[in-house]
Amino acid sequence: MSVKILSKSEAFYDTYERRPGSNKDQTHYCPGCGHGILHKLIAEALVDFGVTKNSIVVGPVGCSVFTHYYFNAGNFQSAHGRAPAVATGVKRSLPESIVLSYQGDGDLAAIGGNEILHAANRGEAITVFFVNNAIYGMTGGQMAPTTLIGQKTTTTPYGRTLENEGYPIGMSEIISQLASPVYVERVMLADTRSINAARKAVRKGIENQVEKKGFSFIEVLSTCPTGWKMTAPQAEEWIKTTMLESFPLGVYKDIADQVEPLILHKDTVPSRRVPKFLGLNQEGEGFDISQMKIAEDVDQEIKIAGFGGQGVLSLGVWLSEIGMREDLKVSWIPSYGPEMRGGTANCHVKLSRTDIGSPLVTHSNILIAMNRPSLEKFEADVVEGGVIIWDNSLIDIEPTRKDIRNMPIPATQIAKDLGTTRISNVVILGVLAGITDFLDPDVVQRVLPIIFKKKQLLSINLKAFQKGLELGRELAN
Ligand SMILES: Cc1ncc(C[n+]2csc(CCOP(=O)(O)OP(=O)(O)O)c2C)c(N)n1
Ligand code: SF4
Ligand SMILES: [Mg+2]
Image 1 (cartoon, rainbow, N blue to C red):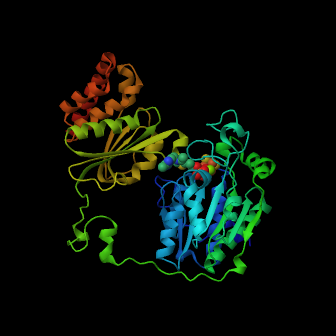
Image 2 (cartoon, helix red, strand yellow):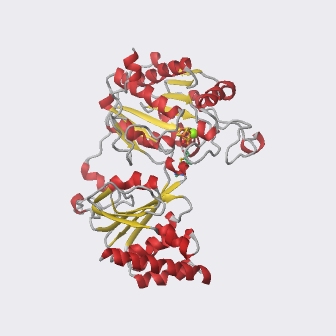
Image 3 (cartoon, rainbow, N blue to C red):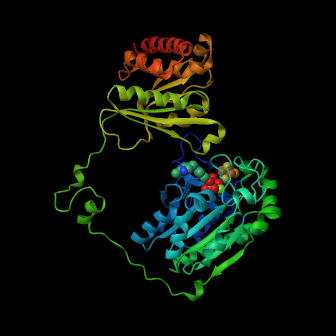
């Protein structure tokens, strides 16, 4: 028994290779977070029913956005609130698979409130795990539909009030009123006993699907010590003393034994009709999927990362702005995963002569690391022969890679010498213009006055750019 509890479930990857950075053994969840416990309960059930390889976990947007790092099963990551729609599509096209939708309260009850109601009402043969931690954990603790009356969040700093925000929503109560769901239960993760009860509910939800019984919904009252600003034991206690008043536990509906197994048909679309469905072409006009243009010739894939306040996102915007003036295709996306809580920021920038397929930079040819966590986290993702520009006035380690061009730049020190550390990103812009041929320094110098309208600001930024440019040119030679 002790082996079973202490060892990691086979439904998890041995090491989390999809997790960026060097920590491949631990999850990204905060200590004391309920998500990790629920993952474990689900993983154990998948193994016990022998369905891991046949299962598909549909992850949400929220702290559990990275379920695909952990479950050694099929994985989807859906848009915010859309997990039930994705799960519907997956289950209908692969009726023999076990499809799990995993969602937080912001995801399921706020932005995705409509999605879940209709998936439940249609009686989709999926299992939904609803993690109710009464807050938006990932984005820094805003009010969720399930936030309690009186609960302080960043958007209800004086506490949620009935007059302003209304009552917390009881999703189990609502879903259980619909005719189609076969099983609805609310459980909690607050101590060993309640976790054991939750384990049973998780198993039942999955077993129902194995037996083709229809829509199951398991709401899990779950700790968020970070969002609640509590220690882990305080958070567990808070569930018992406070959350339970608004969210009573129990089986809200269970008709699984009374319904016949569903006969699930595979909805197929003849492939000749796909282009028409996608609105790509008229049927019969010679649509050829091999002719679809895939962007191959992306010239620069840049990841810029550092602390919030270092101008990391602005540097990305400027690069895109300059790229546009150079007639390039450009994309810029800020990435705000849970790592935002640590105060870090990063953005993905692509500059290309051809169409850009995806704005995501997964393998950068230039990494700009403005602090140590960013270097540690993204170094492994740089392509062989790529460039790592890192601020060696702030970072006290070196890149470990030997197959990249290593460019230590004391950007913050240079900026400080010029009068303010806030312009270290412009120093880096100069370095980029110096080491590559995709940023024409003249164009950059024409764009800077548009960005920095105040004369004084412009003059110091031009100096920072010039310094970086000289340094970049030296390094390039
Ligand atoms: C379309 C869209 N709107 C808003 C956001 C910002 N956002 C990210 S996660 C989140 C809420 C997460 O809260 P919850 O679902 O309760 O998950 P938790 O982190 O608490 O587990 C929001 C609003 C987003 N990523 N996408
Ligand atoms: S912020 Fe809350 S929900 Fe998110 S990982 Fe941390 S404890 Fe868990
Ligand atoms: Mg939440």
